[in-house]
Amino acid sequence: MKTVLVLNGPNLNLLGTREPAVYGSQTLADVQDLCERASAANGLKLDFRQSNHEGELIDWIHEAGRQQAAGKLLGVILNAGAYTHTSIALHDAIKGAGVTLIELHISNVHAREAFRHTSWISPVAKAVMAGFGVNGYALAIAGLVQLTEKK
Image (cartoon, rainbow, N blue to C red; front, side, top):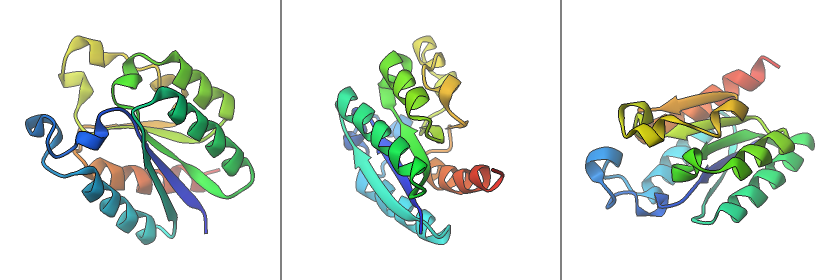
Protein backbone atom coordinates (compact mmCIF):
# COMPACT_ATOMS: atom_id res chain seq x y z
CA MET A 1 0.00 0.00 0.00
CA LYS A 2 1.46 3.35 -1.05
CA THR A 3 1.47 6.47 1.08
CA VAL A 4 0.32 10.00 0.37
CA LEU A 5 2.29 12.72 2.13
CA VAL A 6 0.30 15.80 3.13
CA LEU A 7 2.50 18.74 4.07
CA ASN A 8 1.22 21.90 5.71
CA GLY A 9 3.29 25.05 6.01
CA PRO A 10 3.38 28.06 8.29
CA ASN A 11 0.41 29.11 10.38
CA LEU A 12 -1.73 26.14 9.36
CA ASN A 13 -1.44 24.96 12.97
CA LEU A 14 -3.75 27.95 13.70
CA LEU A 15 -6.62 26.61 11.59
CA GLY A 16 -9.92 27.01 13.38
CA THR A 17 -8.87 30.23 15.09
CA ARG A 18 -6.99 32.18 12.40
CA GLU A 19 -9.33 34.18 10.15
CA PRO A 20 -12.25 31.72 10.25
CA ALA A 21 -14.10 33.83 7.67
CA VAL A 22 -11.32 32.94 5.20
CA TYR A 23 -10.14 29.50 6.36
CA GLY A 24 -13.20 28.10 8.17
CA SER A 25 -13.60 26.82 11.69
CA GLN A 26 -12.12 23.35 11.26
CA THR A 27 -8.82 22.68 13.00
CA LEU A 28 -5.70 21.04 11.59
CA ALA A 29 -6.67 17.91 13.54
CA ASP A 30 -10.02 17.95 11.70
CA VAL A 31 -8.14 18.24 8.40
CA GLN A 32 -5.95 15.30 9.36
CA ASP A 33 -9.07 13.20 10.12
CA LEU A 34 -10.52 14.19 6.73
CA CYS A 35 -7.27 13.18 5.03
CA GLU A 36 -7.19 9.86 6.90
CA ARG A 37 -10.66 9.03 5.58
CA ALA A 38 -9.85 10.18 2.03
CA SER A 39 -6.60 8.21 2.00
CA ALA A 40 -8.27 5.03 3.25
CA ALA A 41 -11.08 5.43 0.69
CA ASN A 42 -8.41 5.55 -2.03
CA GLY A 43 -6.41 2.60 -0.69
CA LEU A 44 -3.56 4.73 0.65
CA LYS A 45 -1.72 5.26 3.91
CA LEU A 46 -1.43 8.84 5.14
CA ASP A 47 1.62 10.69 6.38
CA PHE A 48 0.40 14.11 7.63
CA ARG A 49 2.81 16.82 8.77
CA GLN A 50 2.91 20.56 9.57
CA SER A 51 5.85 22.89 10.06
CA ASN A 52 6.34 26.62 10.40
CA HIS A 53 9.93 26.16 9.17
CA GLU A 54 10.87 26.31 5.50
CA GLY A 55 13.95 24.10 5.87
CA GLU A 56 11.96 21.32 7.48
CA LEU A 57 9.44 21.39 4.59
CA ILE A 58 12.36 21.20 2.14
CA ASP A 59 13.85 18.21 3.97
CA TRP A 60 10.47 16.46 3.86
CA ILE A 61 10.17 17.09 0.10
CA HIS A 62 13.65 15.62 -0.44
CA GLU A 63 12.59 12.59 1.61
CA ALA A 64 9.40 12.32 -0.45
CA GLY A 65 11.39 12.23 -3.69
CA ARG A 66 13.44 9.31 -2.39
CA GLN A 67 10.31 7.50 -1.15
CA GLN A 68 8.53 7.98 -4.47
CA ALA A 69 11.58 6.74 -6.40
CA ALA A 70 11.55 3.64 -4.17
CA GLY A 71 7.89 3.01 -5.04
CA LYS A 72 6.62 3.65 -1.51
CA LEU A 73 5.01 7.07 -1.99
CA LEU A 74 2.28 8.03 -4.43
CA GLY A 75 2.98 11.75 -4.13
CA VAL A 76 2.63 14.91 -2.07
CA ILE A 77 -0.17 17.34 -1.31
CA LEU A 78 1.44 20.63 -0.27
CA ASN A 79 -0.27 23.57 1.38
CA ALA A 80 2.79 25.77 1.65
CA GLY A 81 0.86 28.67 3.15
CA ALA A 82 2.61 32.00 2.62
CA TYR A 83 5.77 30.20 1.43
CA THR A 84 3.83 29.63 -1.81
CA HIS A 85 4.42 33.28 -2.68
CA THR A 86 7.98 33.66 -1.39
CA SER A 87 9.97 30.42 -1.50
CA ILE A 88 12.19 29.76 -4.47
CA ALA A 89 13.85 27.21 -2.19
CA LEU A 90 10.64 25.12 -2.05
CA HIS A 91 10.33 25.44 -5.85
CA ASP A 92 13.88 24.14 -6.25
CA ALA A 93 13.32 21.31 -3.75
CA ILE A 94 10.22 20.06 -5.57
CA LYS A 95 11.93 20.29 -8.95
CA GLY A 96 15.11 18.64 -7.67
CA ALA A 97 13.34 15.82 -5.83
CA GLY A 98 11.24 14.98 -8.87
CA VAL A 99 8.24 14.23 -6.69
CA THR A 100 4.65 14.30 -7.98
CA LEU A 101 3.04 17.17 -6.08
CA ILE A 102 -0.31 18.94 -5.92
CA GLU A 103 -0.30 22.53 -4.66
CA LEU A 104 -3.25 23.15 -2.35
CA HIS A 105 -4.87 26.27 -0.92
CA ILE A 106 -7.92 26.35 1.35
CA SER A 107 -9.01 29.75 0.05
CA ASN A 108 -9.13 31.00 -3.53
CA VAL A 109 -5.83 32.87 -3.48
CA HIS A 110 -6.67 34.53 -6.81
CA ALA A 111 -9.64 36.30 -5.22
CA ARG A 112 -7.48 37.71 -2.42
CA GLU A 113 -4.63 40.21 -2.12
CA ALA A 114 -2.51 40.72 -5.24
CA PHE A 115 0.65 39.35 -3.58
CA ARG A 116 -1.11 35.98 -3.25
CA HIS A 117 -1.63 35.70 -7.02
CA THR A 118 1.99 34.64 -7.63
CA SER A 119 3.06 31.10 -6.78
CA TRP A 120 6.60 29.75 -6.88
CA ILE A 121 5.11 26.27 -6.39
CA SER A 122 2.72 26.15 -9.37
CA PRO A 123 5.42 25.85 -12.08
CA VAL A 124 6.69 22.61 -10.52
CA ALA A 125 3.34 21.20 -9.32
CA LYS A 126 1.44 18.59 -11.29
CA ALA A 127 -1.84 20.36 -10.41
CA VAL A 128 -3.24 23.16 -8.26
CA MET A 129 -6.28 23.00 -5.95
CA ALA A 130 -7.68 26.23 -4.50
CA GLY A 131 -10.86 27.59 -3.01
CA PHE A 132 -12.63 24.39 -1.92
CA GLY A 133 -12.03 24.97 1.79
CA VAL A 134 -10.58 22.08 3.75
CA ASN A 135 -12.54 19.68 1.51
CA GLY A 136 -9.89 20.49 -1.08
CA TYR A 137 -7.57 18.10 0.75
CA ALA A 138 -9.85 15.12 0.04
CA LEU A 139 -10.29 16.27 -3.56
CA ALA A 140 -6.52 16.60 -3.94
CA ILE A 141 -5.93 13.08 -2.62
CA ALA A 142 -8.45 11.67 -5.10
CA GLY A 143 -6.91 13.81 -7.83
CA LEU A 144 -3.41 12.54 -7.02
CA VAL A 145 -4.65 8.98 -7.48
CA GLN A 146 -6.13 9.88 -10.88
CA LEU A 147 -2.99 11.71 -11.98
CA THR A 148 -0.68 8.87 -11.07
CA GLU A 149 -2.90 6.15 -12.58
CA LYS A 150 -2.32 7.76 -15.99
CA LYS A 151 1.41 7.12 -15.79
